Image (cartoon, rainbow, N blue to C red):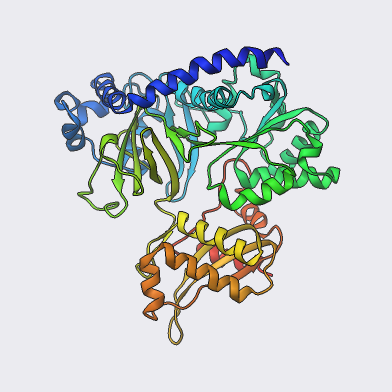
Length: 497
């Protein structure tokens, strides 16, 4: 056994016991974090503008701090970018995590010296909980890869700025540096396909034990490996035993990923974002990810049927219920306040607090009042494909509003690894499963307002070509599962079979 594997076990046990204690104190920890945040930022510009000195409890917190998105926070961020201090949080940020907004252009999310540990330690804790629970630590002695963005950083207002994954790359602990692939120079390559070829070359012949990244880009890496070697990934890397993923719902990609690997291996789901590392899978047997309740983030939740309303209900952790969708709102120790991160979550447990991500608040279809969300189309596709023996590479859905004669419908753009024998049967199965999950959609179909959905098959690698055409191939970029307009749908017409 490798020395790192031996050393990892006692440390894993220590961290796992700490995590278990925090499960029991989640509500108390959240209350403490809220009070700490207000006290720490009381003398900042934001704190003075919002009367932090008058906040004594959660009700005061909600009155003084409205829910806002990046655009509403932008005036404060611009001052920080100008080099000014004590604006959103005390002092200046340690970094800006640069992320592309769908409507705001580039967004610059502050990361402070107090918040950086949230990003670094949570990923570590996920791996250590896995070791403590399973007893499997051999992977720590092999090579590990995270398919990430470039670690090269710019400076804005004297603050280093870059992709979150690139920032985190600078904080990989020394004891893991010798395990990490690819090398720094390869990670700095901006063109995804050039970078991917380099990664394949560097990792071939190495003892890869852990591979991590966003599922569609991990699949692209696997495809290149299989093409190069003519073998399954599990044969190329016989000691590959742990897949770590996040960023999108895993289920639509799971079957093909494991077929590419050629054997069943363990996996860990993470919920990281530029705004914070919110949750991680702490158990191989329980569903969902453990909410990160003691890591500098105060969480609030808006019920999905209230989202977007001026007087929307805001709930603290102790008020949430299982099996309800909530928009996730955060305040943190980097200066985000009442911040709408754009994700919907659902609690699968409140003892401890475990969640699943059900979709993006801006990624839905409600052109006809149906409000279909990502979790629902993912479920429908998984179930229908299994029924009809189809294998799916990627898909996205958009509304088609028919003017004049004929009925409107949902158009599903689907890239198949294996097509069904009967496409009409697949469309009907998709429709029926979606109707089971969404009563509004069911009413629209039953009432003759909408007709059965239409499937538009996309050519092989069509989605990759589309992402390349908009400059978002690889890295941390994700294809929206749902759109409430035709922008993506119209662009995909070029890539249909």
